[in-house]
Image (tube, rainbow, N blue to C red):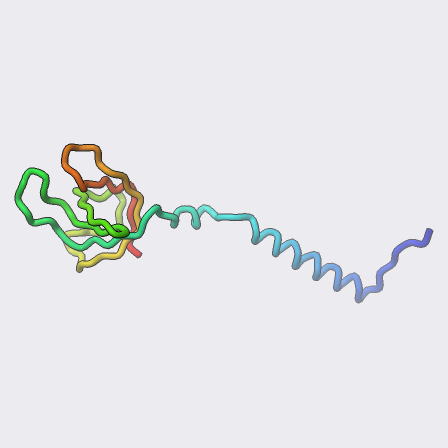
Length: 114
C-alpha cells in the first residue's frame, strides 16, 4: 500500500484550510453571554409622567405594542433618569402585569435605552 504524500505547497494549503475551518466552527457556537444580556421581551416608549390625581394614578406612561401601561419605578441599576429625560424615550424591557387592584400597572424587571 502506497503511503499518501503531500508536497510542501499542498501541506500549506491544507494547513490554511484547516485553520479556516476551525475559525468558522468556533464562530458558530451560538449566543455569547453578551448577546443574551441584550435580549429583552419587549420594545417600548416611555411617553411621560401621569400627572392625574386619583387613587390609581401617578407613575410613568409607557407604550408597549398597541397598549399603554403605567409603571411606578425603574429597577435598580437602570441607566435611565426619568426626572431628566426628554420624552419620548425608546426602551427595551422585561416586565409583567402587576396583580394589584389598579389595572394597567406593570412592574419593570429590566430596562435599557435603545
